[in-house]
Amino acid sequence: MQTDPCRTLVQVLREEFGLTGTKSSCNAGECGVCTVLIDGDPVPSCIVPIGKVSRRHVLTIEGLRGDRILTCLQGAFVEKGAIQCGYCTPGMLLTSRALLEWNTNPSELEVRTALSGNICRCTGYTKILEAVFDAARALQRGGENT
Amino acid sequence: MSEEYLIPNSITEALQMLDGKRRPIAGGTDLMVARRTGDLGATSFVDVTQIPELQKLELEEDRLLVGAGCRFSDLEVLLREKVPGLAEACHQVGSPLIRNLATLGGNLVSASPAADTVPPLAAFGATVEIVSLQKRREIPVAQLAIGPKQTQLASGELVTRIMVPIRKSNEGQAFLKLGRRRAMAISIVNGAARVLLEGRTIKEASLAIGSAAPCVIVSRSVPEILIGKELHDDLLSGLGSAVASEVKPISDLRASADYRREMCGLLARRLIILAYQRALKGGKS
Image 1 (spheres, each protein chain N blue to C red):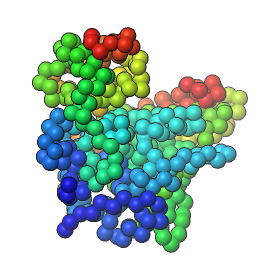
Image 2 (cartoon, chains in turn orange, blue):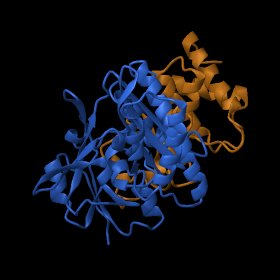
Image 3 (tube, each protein chain N blue to C red):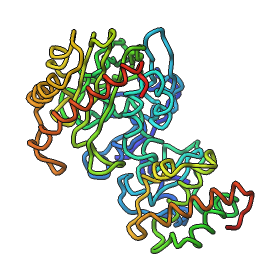
Image 4 (cartoon, helix red, strand yellow):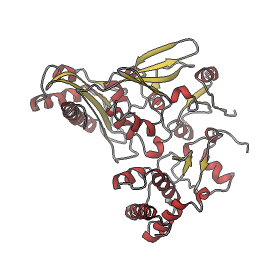
């Protein structure tokens, strides 16, 4: 596709590809609702110029449909009531998924630190943290269902 | 005007692209925000993050040569053993998402007075390598910024490496940052210290404070007060006041000048205590 290379990744994803699972809010890289994975690393797509990713691998929440870790996290988020308005949720899920891929038994500090760039206005974070721990435990037990 | 986004694969290629109208971009975590708020104007970019020489971390006998394109998410781990005070600062920049993009070189070139990596680099005596098509030069990190968001870089110059002295075995390092939150916070006041001991006596000491002046303040009084002595409570209160009188803070949306000045004194004492304790334990915290 052809576009201005300085247009932001979040804009291109939402407006050109119709991938609206990635949300837009602060547009300053601070809130995390626009989180995507570039080469496996969670980044704020609102401050990434599309030109930067011309030869990189970008994964959105849609791209992880059916992924074992994500499915486990989604189940745990629903079970624990970690979703209210849902706007922070795709970002929370992607960042948590990236954490659990390399750290299967994170401590509370590690989870809090990993999620410290994803803001939630609704839940007060407690249930989100519980859901991530639940999912980590379930994945260690080898299951997909919590 | 159409904006270009060029991605060179070598330093030479990058330098040839920097013709005065194009600007280097690394992680983009500062530049893309500035672009959005209109502070940048129409700009073409030269992305330097795909240049292998800028991603390297090389070990010399007593210093590390850090590629300017190294990201904080890597540096917060890689620097932990050899330059723990700088690793602590890298770990507290922005958020984990920001740290997956933002680079050490970018933090220095953005030249925010609140940059978290500047106090440790200044306190530890680090230098930066600056190259252009014509020449190469090396200057102390503390001299790179000449004012808020301004560096002495000329058009066509690129910061390529940061040379950081490695912590010695009887040396302790500390970094502290005061902010409204424990993550994703611009520093109200930040600082770093290093203390080198001979037995319990301070042989070398330095302290740098950021976010309290247009550029980083490397304290002149800290070495004067501490060198040749053991650390005692009586030294500490004098040290705090001395540092508080060296800084030139402003009042802004984050804090008042008075508050900053008082916090500088407090931070200076805490930094020296931490660095001293760590030096006594052989530098481990």
